[in-house]
Structures are given as structure tokens and as C-alpha cells.
Image (cartoon, rainbow, N blue to C red; front, side, top):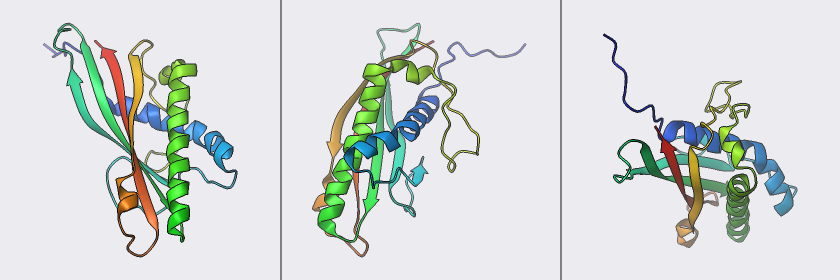
Length: 182
């Protein structure tokens, strides 16, 4: 007899891929509103590692919490960290550029959720290569799975640290997504 899982919940992996695809698609337009000379992310990371190409985006799951009041589905609150890294030879310029990139990512995520929440279900959005194979598309989440998307913090702790060598700095956006899977 074959084994069948009770739930088919996918948790963080398809959500992170969908977020990356949305940012990959919309980031150039968002940056053009800030400063037309800004380039979109040149590096996309799924795990912490030394950044080689700037600007860079790191997107990792931080925590998944389940709603124990809903035992017959996988109602979950997922916290995701989006690390944004930029570089510039002037420390004052890098601080302002970093704030612009954080603002652009914030606007992409908020606009996608508030204006076109169906973006979270699209299966036609390309994913960047690397880290994904050329031609890989976002998985799309089943309609109605995403219940809420909230940016809960922008963190600029690294701006207070003294630079060592190249003037590269990073900030973090903390994102909370509420999903309901079965």
C-alpha cells in the first residue's frame, strides 16, 4: 500500500520562489522611479554566502508558525528575511543607495499584494539564473492560499558599522506572510 500524506502543504519553498519571481519582474520598474541609473539585482541568493556581484538580494525563511486552533488545515505564519546589499566607493552614497533599494523592494512587495494579489498564483513568471536553472518558472501558489502579506520592519543595523575595505552595506526587510494550505 502506498503512503499518502494527510496534508499537501508546501510551506516556504514555493512562496520564496514566487516572491523572487515577483521581485525579479518588477524591480527594474521600481528602481527606475528612484534613479534610472540603478541596476536591478545582479546576485540572487537562497543561503547566506559572500556576495560577489552587487546589488544582491538574499531571501531566506526565518520561521514558520502554525495556528493550533485550525487542526484540519495548515494555517501558517511565515517570516522571511530579505537581505539587500549594495556597494559604492562613497560611504554616504552607499547609505542612500541602500535606502532606495529597500524602498523599491518594499514597494514591489506591497504593490504586488495590495494591487495584484493574483501575482502569487502566476505560474508564468521567470526566475533568475543563477540560482535557478535557465528557463525555470515560479511555481505559483494555489488561489486563495496567501491570506496576508505584511512588511514588518526595515533594519539598517549595518549602516552603523565601520566599513572594512570596499564600501558595501546591507539592510534587511522582515516580511510576514500568512498562508492557509491543506
